[in-house]
Length: 122
Image (cartoon, rainbow, N blue to C red; front, side):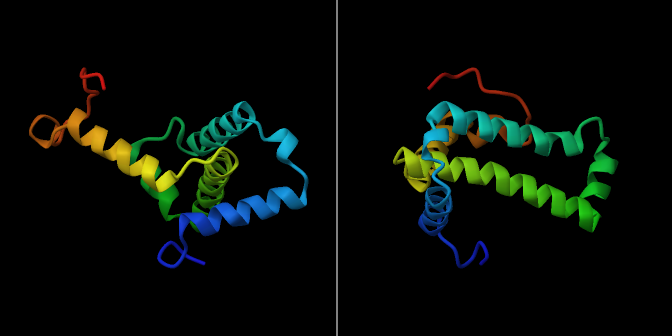
């Protein structure tokens, strides 16, 4: 299984099967899944907290730390996939629509090479 051969729907079905086998639906309301996504994202952040750019690069080169990062990314993805599976969100469509909005909000002519938030509201 890899990014080039796996699609989002396959991942959602895998998550659904995993959770249904464990009877986890009662524990996976929208709030619970949102909390899970944020909690796991915070665990990813913890790996890089208080690190310089140079230290971040070293972390990314270290096999054990890359493994830990991959596990945290997978945990975040688990909760995003589970939320979208349980509550019928097409992640690819959501992503495509959001990227269209982002392109309007952050035009290349105004934001290329800049790291600040747009004041435009959508």
